[in-house]
Amino acid sequence: MVYKLTDQGGELLALRYDLTVPFARFLVLNNVGNIKLFHIRKVKRRDQPQLEKGRYLDFYQCDFDITGSLYRRMIPDAECLCVAIEILDALPIGDFQIKVNHRCLLDAILELAGVPPEKFRVICSAVDKLDKEPWSEVKREMVDEKGLKSEVADKIGEFVLQKGPPMEMLETLLEAKQFGTHVGASTALEDMRICFRYLKAMDKLHFLSFDLSLARGLDYYTGIIYEAVCMNGNTQVGSIGGGGRYDNLVSMFQEAGKQTPCVGVSVGIERVFTLMEARIREEQGGSIKRPNVNVLVASVGQNMMEHTMAVTKRLWDANVSAEFSPLENRKLKFELANALEREIPFMVICGEDEWKEGMCKVKDLKNKTEETVKVEDVAKILRGKGVVPVGCEFAAELMKEEDK
Image 1: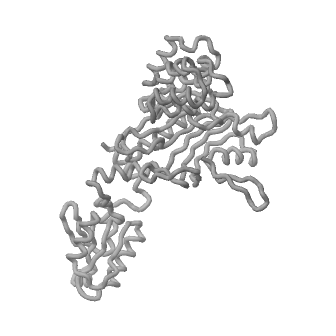
Image 2: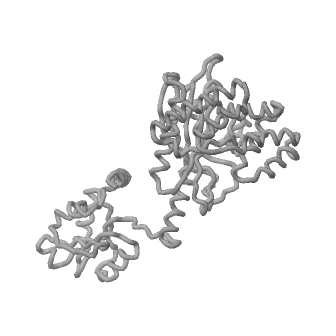
């Protein structure tokens, strides 16, 4: 999955695979101990692109990380999960779920099942496929390809096929005492209990599923791990985000004995866009008809181009999304048809007679109303009708949701 190459001197190089490892190096090089940080950058994967599933060779990731030892147990972990949930819940992608597990629970499962330590990671890789393949196929891979004994695989299956609501799953595991007195598993289950308690306090626990099959492929995870998946069966894009605790990664770049606790979450931007596009297509009958502006400025009469441009510039100065036709003396019926086809909600019409009096017409295409206003008031009138300034759309959506 990592792009590897050599430079002219023969030095082995790799293209940026994720944002977590570069972030760890940044912490060391800048001697940063405690920080909360989000960043968006492009990463590259050596993979087979599948555009309909949002899988690309290079794409953007948005990461949020918390580092340092100032925090009480599991507080940063709960905060990262809360941030991920709030991001995804604010986007028009449909229902989603956050699967959670703990890396120490996975290690305990493999240890109790009798898996040799040298096969832990390859077996984890097989277990992680349970969201795409049935247990019979995963077991076949463990036995036939990984060389595991059938009874050992069956023992693993007793654990990893369990999933459900967080608190219910936790109580089930504790009551059944499947992990016995395993120290690592006991610590991990206590971590999960504390994290679930915090998430319940923040009203985010209902988004989670405690899934013992979740493994996450990267070796640097040391504690809680999580993965966001879309629950809309019509669009299969796999994971749309994920992360976990990685307490030992930064120490790889530090002097011996130092440790910088870290936890973070990453959201795949292109995969989110794929889901948003699919939902829009479904809502609009298979095609996307989205206005790229809020206002179309048109004219009636001869030689009105300069006046049309002046009104458009006035709207731009007020941060109103608007455009005008570059065609001279275009008939109004064609301008109107253009606005209706693109679902542009408003038109401003500059007529010869109105312009002489410093006036223009504002046409609300959705409500089928029209009024004549002063040219200098056109931006104020449009805002009064609900036109949101460019850059404020997201905040307006949030306010609209709060008013419901």
